[in-house]
Length: 466
Image (cartoon, rainbow, N blue to C red):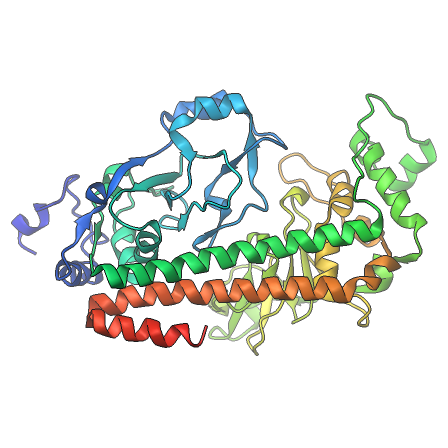
């Protein structure tokens, strides 16, 4: 490339091949055909966290104001299931990073380029960390902007920006200069409406799991239960020696009360209702070109491990994995508070494997469906037990034996059909949300490549099939 062309519109004098990839240069030329405008012209503000030193001025807590991080992205949606919280005082301190309805949330570090829209239906106030930029749209729909930024061309623009050797990141001024192609009001409105439907459908999907959990807790008689928090308590020496644990948290009264309450109801131990699958998959023993879906524990933050996860080649997987089958329930034994519990439903013949941190449960019989078991394991009573069974400071884990010794009352089986229906409806909503967002993104791509008429035809056809 000519030196003059390299330096043109190149504020930080980038000379690396990543910035000048052919795909990026070709995308620039296509985008220029559609009267692009920089984000700085389309928004009233692009804000971030403020001084990084503010991270030392507050602590996370169990309750309070939700505090979004990069790990809360699920694709291009936000998942609140493992959100941390901060105090009202910390929220006032971090006023620059407050999230408000209609903002476009763009990840600046880690999973750079993940995009979501802050919805009116969220429970505000909400805050966010230093890795999330807040774009406040002024003359463009937030849903159109999110659809473009998550499209192929938006991703190409964003992926050429990150700098840094260890933890790559983008700066606010880089985001402000991203070029957004503009189309007719009619096309942008239809793309926006399709993307908005996607985000609303996704909210329905997660609401369904919460509704199912509340139904299950009511059936177990825990609807109004709150964990006891005595200042002092004791345990029998025989129990201490039998457990092999000498730490106080293992004998927390809240945990013991839940265990005893579940055991008092007619039922069976989890070990009697499921098989714990320990089958291992060793990548070195598989053909290098074998394709498998490889799930990490963070994938289970969404309670469904499905075909959205793209397959990998065996040669690209560096460690031994657990084997999954459709209908299994995978629960991470690491950091129970994250509630990384999911049903495996891929629906195809590509083998599924997962992190060795997963405990893989395969239900015996049909009395309790995998979906119901997932909801039971995510519910507050079980999570209370697992919380106080954990051992370790840096990477706290619970044991398989503690998990399998939990009693599963017959009441769980009695509401299984009802719970399954609620969860499956939620999964259907999630699938539809993904398809709707893909349609919105693809429509923008078609408009860039083939014009508005082709994009409108695509959207009209997609509307009849999703």
